[in-house]
Length: 268
Image (cartoon, rainbow, N blue to C red):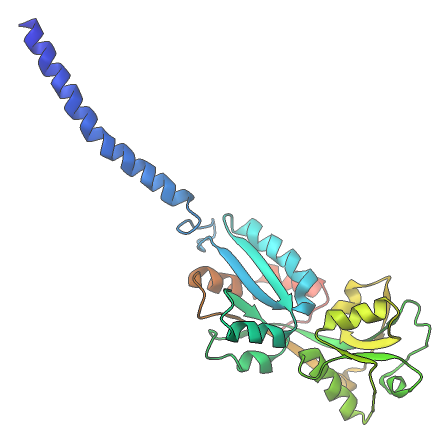
């Protein structure tokens, strides 16, 4: 009798083990799904993902700070930025560059991409200043001084947002400037001034502030200035639509707005 019972118990153990194997596999699958960045969610409920954001060159410094803050708040999410002039970013979008969101330095560029983006939201504003060499050796004091032919002035190209804003303010004051070069983005303008290759250039206030100690900034009165607007939008080609939307929405949050305003950007 004992051998028979032993055989029955052994058979039952085999059946039980066979039933437990798929259950264990299911448990592992569930654990894998939880750890998979493609299906995981952050503590805030936003889906975790690897995001690529195309952003205007003037956002380079502040977005590095904002990106780090966003990743900390959204564990499992990695945000990679690609910075360039807004016109370059627009070309990348039209060429189908793989990305999830776009932030430009003007509404005109964003409006030209309506077929490729979701609804845009302005997240910040900016203004122009005159960047000069450290200590302002040429004693530049106002926009009219840029018309001096003895002064080496550098501007952004007219197809670049900061270039358009520059042309707008100069034309409004009937000031003719013959730049020694026209650059592809605001950072290139700033670099020319920093290196002493130009005596002055028109840049965003935030860019000059980020180069304190390397350049001086001459304020332009509001009545003579232009307001730059920064719209943000998701890209329809994004493979991480929900995560991209969460990031764009976050840019208008109190935390993101504080980071932007601490860097010198104005409220939307």
